[in-house]
Length: 148
Image (cartoon, rainbow, N blue to C red):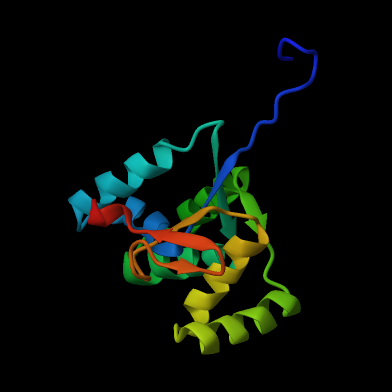
């Protein structure tokens, strides 16, 4: 409460985490990207909430088990722990909006699914290396943690 008895307005900043950021956290072959991605994930606090989607969870499982050779049961445990984040469920409305986003912004359908999911969760930014750093799409700013 402030001096006049009204509640203060507090806004939480939401950050959408793209699959590649999570995969790099597991990547033993690129220690620099691994350290950077682990650090940005650790930076999430009560003031900044992480958001992912069901698409990100699926891509994370496939990329880490198929490309990195990680144990599927370990990745299943990690997927369980990722449920601490807000999760956007990819539904038919998001898919149709992603088609429009892909066409209008000339980005891949998969990247547009990320953008639309982030927008639907009211995220301020997306941590990714797949889109141009600083680009604004549908009111969401892209940020490449590896570009710093």
